[in-house]
Length: 414
Ligand code: AMP
Image (tube, rainbow, N blue to C red; front, side):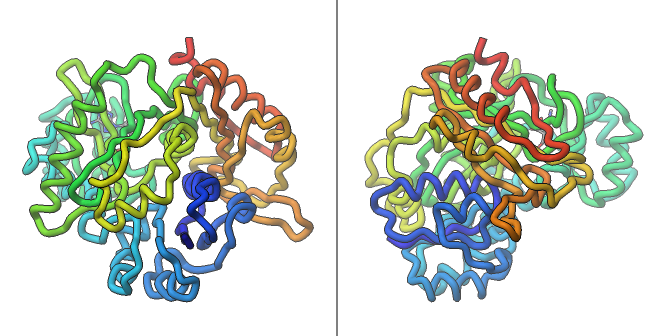
């Protein structure tokens, strides 16, 4: 198979790494990619939001499968011209991707499908927002309706700050605060059949102890030793399958990766959000545990033949990933600094380094090129071992102003 992956992050590096280990994959391409992906795939400098350019590249390469990593190209409709050209694509079309592209749309789908989620109001004026904030009380949860790269949600005790965010966004969803631990559960679907992956947990705040601003994610681990037994089956039945069925009934089937962000509250499991693509950094740990070769699964989702697939096989091992971010992330990340120690981090095979914001420098060095720079990932017999190996990898790597959390998976590993 010839596979083309679209995107630039550590999620795409994780996808490319797994695809490169699949014996069915003969050629692997990525557009636009990064310095790490370049080691396993051929890079192409194509604008990932330009459906015509992506389709032209896929045609030129004779791609048998295109895997769209990030949400922005999906919401922009990059899957449509690919499908129109008869090229199998992993990722939903523009309309189904609204599940992530519009929080209000997601709420509407959940209401129609009977999926448990936070009670909410869609607000477009300051008066509506103020009334909704007072209806729910503190802590306040205000979500930008549109795509905001993980930065559109404000959770605060400060009513004035909540209202200010609502006014700045224009159209927002204001909802009740959900208490309880969060779980990310991914499912691969062809629009009818739904195959859940293993649960993971990510760390959204920038600093140890869940302090500091929200980020795209600072680390993740899997499995979740504390999660209730039967969680995956319950979420499949009450969340994933009804959502996929609802979108198919609406005539806009969702195929690709359905990501359910869940809160395990005292009143039961509730959906915090849906995403229309693999989550970053959870993908790094979920794929590290997947034993079934990846390409065939993604192709079956693209072709509508998931129902005929053997059950997915998983490693019993644990996986931990730690994100190394640049100075100033998330507000104003500093870029252009050389990264040292990448080979040393992988030298004894204990950790592997997935690149996010990196670019090759003029003299063969690797330079920082974004907020989240690397995901240092490791597997081990249990979370404590995986964690120790991942942090041993982190300790080898340095770049100016590098920051990471020191408590990824710490509690769960105890
Ligand atoms: P989202 O982008 O919707 O995942 O929101 C980012 C983060 O904000 C989530 O991972 C939660 O930690 C938090 N959050 C979102 N919605 C709620 C809610 N209704 N109650 C409590 N926390 C929330």
